[in-house]
Length: 99
Image (cartoon, rainbow, N blue to C red; front, side, top):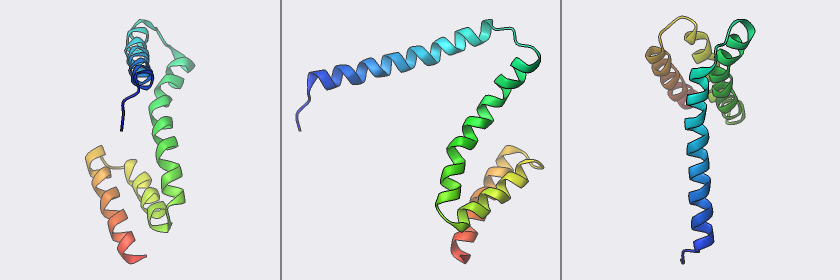
């Protein structure tokens, strides 16, 4: 396998742009003063991204994963994060062995 200089430069350029975009977001977010609906919208971004990553996998891989995702979602309203993760992992393992 040979290393093409154009490909290497494209990868490095994409990495630099990605890094600058992420760091730039941190600097801009610190300067924003958000109130009301704008603050609520910005606070909703992390859970929305997490659900958009997890939901397709949970719903397309099988019944065990879908049920485990539902159990984890219900538990997440009552327990802290570490307990929720543990119950989610245990439930998917148990359900994969049962189903």
